[in-house]
Image 1 (cartoon, helix red, strand yellow):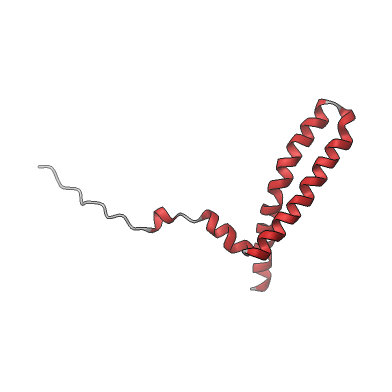
Image 2 (cartoon, rainbow, N blue to C red):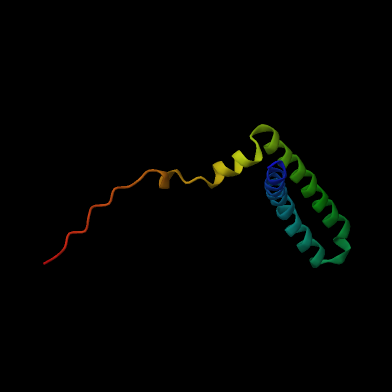
Length: 92
């Protein structure tokens, strides 16, 4: 069971890590594609995204717990309340 929870936590950690990396990686890629002389700036942007991704993922893990954080994000309290639907009346 511990191996399964380790696997789940690893996936959630990677999700939290990926958001800042993608947010900084896309402008880094665009900057590099615009002109190849911008490679050092692109690398710096990507490194900043990786560092901020690690910081964000670890902060979520320590403060809330990864499973509870993502379960609160994906919760749908509107669907938890059972809505009573009126019975269809048959038309004669």
